[in-house]
Length: 59
Image 1 (tube, rainbow, N blue to C red):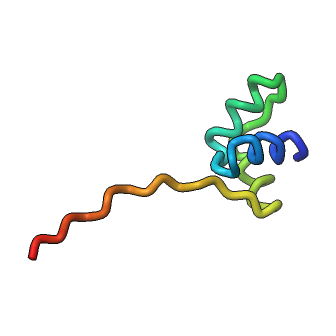
Image 2: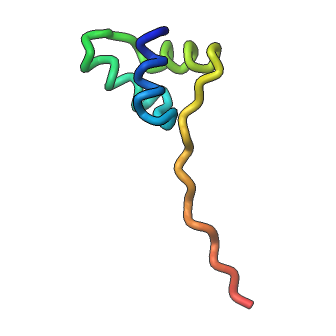
Image 3: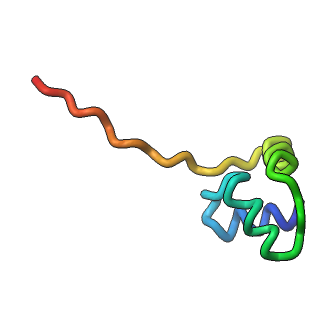
Protein backbone atom coordinates (compact mmCIF):
# COMPACT_ATOMS: atom_id res chain seq x y z
CA UNK A 1 0.00 0.00 0.00
CA UNK A 2 2.91 2.33 0.63
CA UNK A 3 3.95 2.04 -3.00
CA UNK A 4 0.44 2.99 -4.16
CA UNK A 5 0.55 6.02 -1.84
CA UNK A 6 3.89 7.10 -3.31
CA UNK A 7 2.65 6.81 -6.92
CA UNK A 8 -0.57 8.65 -6.04
CA UNK A 9 1.33 11.45 -4.27
CA UNK A 10 3.93 11.75 -7.04
CA UNK A 11 1.14 12.28 -9.57
CA UNK A 12 -0.18 15.23 -7.59
CA UNK A 13 -2.98 12.99 -6.32
CA UNK A 14 -4.42 12.74 -9.82
CA UNK A 15 -3.72 9.09 -10.68
CA UNK A 16 -6.47 6.57 -10.15
CA UNK A 17 -6.13 2.79 -10.32
CA UNK A 18 -5.97 2.75 -14.14
CA UNK A 19 -2.82 4.86 -14.20
CA UNK A 20 -1.36 3.61 -10.91
CA UNK A 21 -1.34 -0.03 -12.03
CA UNK A 22 1.02 0.44 -15.03
CA UNK A 23 3.29 2.62 -12.87
CA UNK A 24 3.51 -0.12 -10.25
CA UNK A 25 4.28 -2.68 -12.95
CA UNK A 26 7.22 -0.54 -14.09
CA UNK A 27 8.54 -0.76 -10.51
CA UNK A 28 8.35 -4.58 -10.68
CA UNK A 29 5.29 -4.79 -8.43
CA UNK A 30 2.68 -6.91 -10.16
CA UNK A 31 -0.88 -6.27 -9.01
CA UNK A 32 -4.19 -6.52 -10.79
CA UNK A 33 -5.99 -3.25 -11.46
CA UNK A 34 -9.03 -4.48 -9.50
CA UNK A 35 -6.83 -5.14 -6.47
CA UNK A 36 -5.35 -1.64 -6.73
CA UNK A 37 -8.88 -0.20 -7.10
CA UNK A 38 -9.96 -1.98 -3.93
CA UNK A 39 -6.90 -0.92 -1.94
CA UNK A 40 -7.23 2.69 -3.05
CA UNK A 41 -10.95 2.74 -2.22
CA UNK A 42 -10.35 1.22 1.23
CA UNK A 43 -7.70 3.85 1.92
CA UNK A 44 -9.78 6.75 0.60
CA UNK A 45 -7.53 7.51 -2.37
CA UNK A 46 -9.18 8.81 -5.54
CA UNK A 47 -7.91 9.89 -8.89
CA UNK A 48 -9.08 13.02 -10.65
CA UNK A 49 -11.79 12.50 -13.25
CA UNK A 50 -11.12 14.60 -16.36
CA UNK A 51 -13.78 17.22 -16.97
CA UNK A 52 -15.65 17.16 -20.23
CA UNK A 53 -16.41 20.33 -22.13
CA UNK A 54 -19.43 22.16 -20.84
CA UNK A 55 -22.40 22.03 -23.18
CA UNK A 56 -22.98 25.14 -25.22
CA UNK A 57 -26.24 26.89 -24.47
CA UNK A 58 -27.72 29.01 -27.21
CA UNK A 59 -29.98 31.80 -26.06
